[in-house]
Image (cartoon, rainbow, N blue to C red):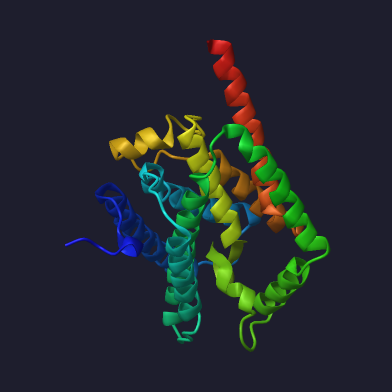
Length: 284
C-alpha cells in the first residue's frame, strides 16, 4: 500500500527522522535532569555558567549527526506548506499549555527540544538548495543585513527588551516571542532562561549540512561529522557553527548587550569555508 506523498519518506530518511525525534527527546530529558541538579546550587560565577551552556550546546551538536545522513528527496510546494504549517501549529499548541510546579520546567525543556528539532529539519531543507559552495556568500550577506536591520529598524530590539523584563520580573503572561526561543539551564536561582532563537539554530544546521554536502570538514575535534554519523560515533562532533553560536551567546552574556548571533556565525563559516578551500587547492 503506497503512502500519501505528504508523509512518504525513503526508508533511510525515515530512520534518520525517527532517530532525530528520539535523540531530541533524550536531550530534553537530560536538560531537565541538569536543571534539577543546578537548582540545588547557589549563584555561580560567569565562568561556571559558561561551562553549563557549553555542555548543553555540545550535547545539542550531537543531535545534528542523523541530519547529516538525510538524503535529498524531490518535494513540491504543497509538501513544504503542509509540514511548515504542521510544525508551526505544534509549536503554538505546546505554548498554550500553562502547567504549574515541576511541570513547567519540564514543558520548557521539551519545547526547547521541539524547537531544535524543527530548526534542524528547516536547516536541512534549506541546505539542499545550495548547488555551489560560493552561493553561501550572498546568503550570509543577506542574513547579516536582515539581522542588523531587524535590530535597528525592526521589532528585534523591542522583543529583546520584553524578554529581559519578563525574566527579571516574571509576572503575567510570557511575551509571544518567547515561544521561538531555546531555553537552557543556568546554575543557581536563574534556572531555565532563553539563550538563542530558532533562527540561530536553523543557520547552525544549514552551515553544518552545507559543509557535509561539499566535503568540507567543519568538525573542530576530529574527522567530519558525516563520517562520524555513518560510523555511529557520538560525542566527537563540534562544528564551527556551534562554536560561533556559543561565542555570540557568551559575548552577549558578559557584555550585557545584544550581540546578533547570525552575523558572527556567517562570518565564521565564510572564513572556515575559504580556509579549507585554499588548503584543499594547495594540497592538489
